[in-house]
Length: 214
Image (cartoon, rainbow, N blue to C red; front, top):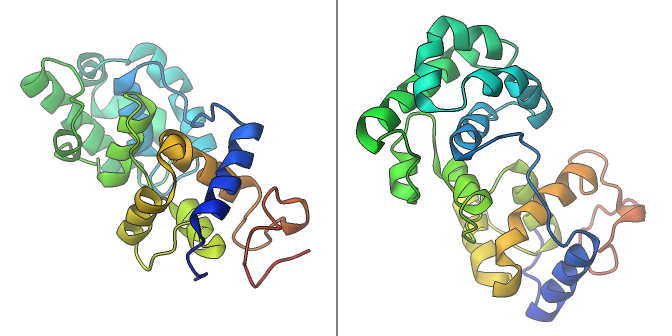
């Protein structure tokens, strides 16, 4: 775990991220907030690519909680059986859809507590939805952000919650909205787990990572 970077270095890092990608976007396909919730819930321990492949046809016929309930367990299973843990995820999606119909008139609530009360929706999923749909500066820490935050010293922490707090505390407010997307994309395509592409890294001169591969 690298030492916490100073304010000016972090500002320079995110200025560079912003210059390259002013409006970064998540890579999970969705057509509305409900399908975003479903897609993020399905992405646990699965790749965005595999989820997008499975939901391409699903969201054409089931883009609301009621339509998902009409599709049923068997119908949903048939669409997402290529995704890891698909049986449990099927149960969660059906249950959360029923709750949305019964308790929220088919609408997705926009508070973290209400979102986290839905089956299969944890803090990370709730933060993704709050950030991507309602543009709240919520920080969804996945394995990429945890790795990048600790390697670079942008947001060091021993736990996911610790890194989340570090992102919120240390990254300047004007970068908070897109911070987690920039960090995820950097970790996914450059600061990789096994073979980081340090030689072509945008922030290699600012990064203190001892295992640099230049």
